[in-house]
Image (cartoon, rainbow, N blue to C red):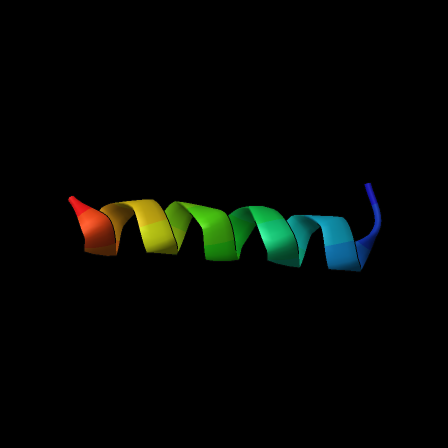
Length: 20
């Protein structure tokens, strides 16, 4: 995976945690 893909996944995880 490229760095951008990993960063997007990390952001998505953080957003899910914040919304819960």
